[in-house]
Structures are given as C-alpha cells and as structure tokens.
Image (cartoon, rainbow, N blue to C red):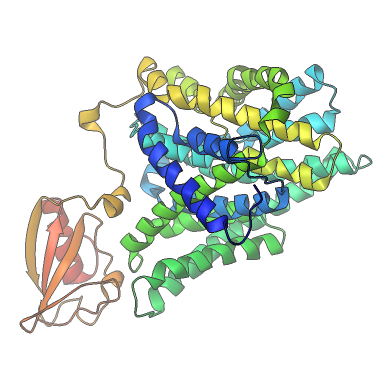
Length: 490
C-alpha cells in the first residue's frame, strides 16, 4: 500500500494506537517496548501484512533527527546535576574515549571477518559505537530499575552524551570512505570543531533560553512548552550551522535548563516527557517501515557474529580501559559493560551511508539494524536480572525518587503550612521564580485580600499575602523562611 495524503493520518494513528496498547502490556512478558514498536513497523511494511511501501532514507533520517532532538532534550531535562556531578568524569570518559575504543575495536574485528575496507569497517564500528539514549532511558524507567551508588546516573549521562561522539566518528569515516586520498589525521580538526562549538553552543543557548523563558510574558501556560521546543530547535540548528555538534548542544542546553528554576517548569517537563515517548514510537515505527526483513536474512549470520563480539568483547574492553584510572568496584564495571544498548540511533546514523551512495551502504544498514535488534533483545530483557546477579540494584522499599520525577508524578507532600508575607519581607514585589524556593516546597495557593490566587512562576508576591505551602519536611519550611526573610538559604 502506498501512503497518500488521504490515508497517512489514518494509518499513522492506527499504528500509534496499536503501539501504545502493545507497549503497555509488553513488559509483562519481559519484552522491551522499543522492540515491539519496531516489530509493528516491520509488520506494517512492504514485507509485512500491512503492505506499506516506505523506501525513503532521507525522510527517515529527517524523522530520526527530529525525534532524537526531543529524546535527548527530554533526557537532559531529567538529568539531576547533583546526582551527575560526582560521576561527571566517568560519564564523560565513557561517552568519548569509550565510544572511540568501541568503534576501533569493533571496526578492526569487522575488517578481519568481512571483505570491507578498513575505512568501511571503521564506519560500521562508528555507527554502532554509542549506547542509545532512547533505549537506555525508556528501559531503565519502564522497569523502574533503581541502582546503587549513582550507577543509574552514570548510565544515563553516558547514553545521553555519547551520541555526539558517534555522530562525529560516523561523519569522519564516511568522509574517508568517499575520499580515499584523505589522511585519517584530517578528521581531527572536524572532531575538535564539532565538540568545542557544540559545548559552547549548548551552554550559551542554555543561558539564553533560561533568560527568555523567565523574562518573556506569554500570558498562557500552554505556550511555554512550545517556546522551549522553538529554543531547542534553534539550539540544534544554529550550532550545526556554524559547524558544531547539534546533538551535544541540545543535551547540554537541556541539562542546564533542567537544573534551573523556570516558569511553568512542571508543565514543560510533563510535555517533554510525553513528546519523548511519542518520538520514540514514531522513530521506531519509521525505522521498522524502512527496513525490508527479506533483505536482512542474508546478513543474519555475520550480523549475529558482529553483535556478539560487540556485546561480549568490544563494549567490555572499552568500558574497562576507559575506567581503569577510576576507583570503581568490578561488578559496577561489568554492569556498565552490559548496559551497552544499541537502538534507534545507530539505525538513524546508518542512513547517512545510504544517502551518500557508497558501495556497501545497504549491507551496512542491514547489519546495523540486526545489531540494534539483538542488542535490545538480549541486553534490554536482562538488565534487571544482571542487576540482581551483580548486586547493584536497590530493594524496592528503598528506591529513591528522582528530583524531576516529582514534577511528573505529582507526589504528595508530608506537611501543609501557611506563611504570611510581612510588608518588609524580601519576597514583596518579586516573582515566585526569582525567589528560588527549594524543590521540596511548593506554593499551591495564595490568599490575597479575601481572594484566592493561583500561583505561577511569574506571579508577583505582594505584602500581606498568605502562601499555602506543601512541604516535604520541617527543613523545607526553614529554607523557605530564610529566603523570605533574607533572600538566601540559611
């Protein structure tokens, strides 16, 4: 069946509806939802029962890049800087040196077991060198898997920040495959330019975005997530336009914003959480439609061989070498090695050789697709089991609640208090967002002149206002009082 304007919305909505229903029940059987989304796309494709013919790598790449923007941005917003800071060095080393070592070791193996040239082998290794943010975020959160000693923060930081490195390596080796006369040293300036400008762009746009979000007065709460979406795409596109890495920029920008006080932050985080899930479904459905299962069958043998080497050799080697100078228990290193999930990102990156028209592009795409599927199936279904075996999982009764999960889950507070604002209070004539209340305290209502005011980040506090607060504990009330009295946390 060919997609037309008349039926694309019907087909798309039906596939989306089926994906949501199937995804809701899939974990009862231990199957990651991402594989189900991919399978539904394949079943709906030209080789499946749906008969939808979709053979447009350029459109698939566009959908993939847009989807990755939302997935990485949402992951960045959920990254708690306090949890990440202690393991920042480990995470950055894994997302840079670890990716490079994975690409080189796997590329070397591919060179010896296939008829690929060395650059083609390194290109394949680069495409699958990063752990997939969509896979890691969704599987860890869907399984509600709590891990000891910042281990989960390490995994999420690595998966959220290592795609830029894989992207640069993919572009670099694709350039070398197309231009055989170039030296491998010629990719160093490209790497430095991408990473440096990407980092500067991400932090710069993060600061600018915070200023815009908190200063602009839109009048409608629902417009603020739309504003953030616009800022997200501006960050990605502007950074990419000057030669920086757009994926790195939006992740850094989102991490910065996620750890600042923003107007209507709860609405923004909830919106992006939903959009990230939507984009994961759309992305995997699209990639499922793009692949032709009949074309994968001839490459299943070599694909399985490469996948096993990646899971059991290349990934562990890269992790152990990257972390050799850090103090970390052996079982934590083994678990990080196992959580090397490959998902949609390698498949999206595999469309670049297709669009470049290199000789082995189709073979690379099908092998990468098979590697991603086997990785999610083998590793994704056993994360909880390995966590228990290696004793790195926390018991259910002591699982902590992530800081930003409070915005999404609407968790109840343990105490309610009313605080009267005297005329000489620091808070008078200041917006709520500018007071920087602790995250463990929420203003749920303001009593003003016998009327009730619904508070928002831009609401200005007036003298004699009565703030109705929901608090986690007494310490939260002490912090609030210190801010109201002096403007600083005691």
